Each structure stands twice: as C-alpha cells, then as structure tokens.
Image (cartoon, rainbow, N blue to C red; front, side, top):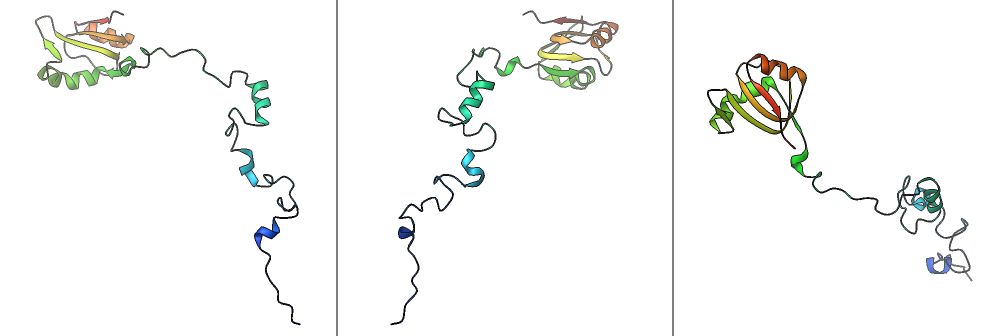
Length: 153
C-alpha cells in the first residue's frame, strides 16, 4: 500500500502536554508582551511581581492622596503677561470697546489677571490696577505721570 502524508491537525498537536511547545508555561515566551508594557504599565491591583517593587520603592503608588482645591483650578486663576508696548498699541481699541476709560486724571485700565512687564515705553498717563507688576514697569508708568496698584485679594 501507498502511504499518504497527512498534515497534523492543530487540535491534535495541542494534546499530550504540548501546549507550551517547549517553552514552559503557556503564557511565557511572548516577547515584550508578557511584561504588560514598559515600566510601570500593566500594574493594577493584580500586577503580579511588580507589586512588591511598588510597595518597596513607591509606597504611596495606589490610592488618592489629599485633594485639589477647585478654586485654584479655575481658568481665571492663571496670570497672563503683558508688556507696556502692547498696552500702548492696544489703547485705542480698549477705549473704543469700553474696556478703558479716558478721564481728566488719565486713562483708567483694569487688568485683573495680568502681570505687567516693563519692555517698551509708557507714552500716556495710565492708572492701572493689575495682579502684579515688575519694578521697571512701575518706574516707567510713574515717570509718565501715572499710577499702578495691585488688585486687592
């Protein structure tokens, strides 16, 4: 009789203890995929061997610690920066849009969330209230006859 060569079916190959195909446990020998990612990735409550590493070197790794103040995370908390030359360039538009008032004493500007820096020159008499300012900005504004004051907290 002629013997016909048949391929082994995969279901038959897995029988008889050959599930790992010579590499031990069936989840081993998968390359980097068996680690759960790089570094501390793949670490959850059931992170395996990485748990002992975390508990020894990073004891506060799990859980929430403290609280965040919701008032500090608001968008208006961030201080914006503006220079004197930018203020001079925008003065006409600010007066047109009623964001600055022109009076006999000078031009009143309310820059609540701004820090004013001193690059440029102060050409007008300005009365500014702002979050903070630099020393050079204060000198230039007072030299032009204006006043600068910090916003009250």
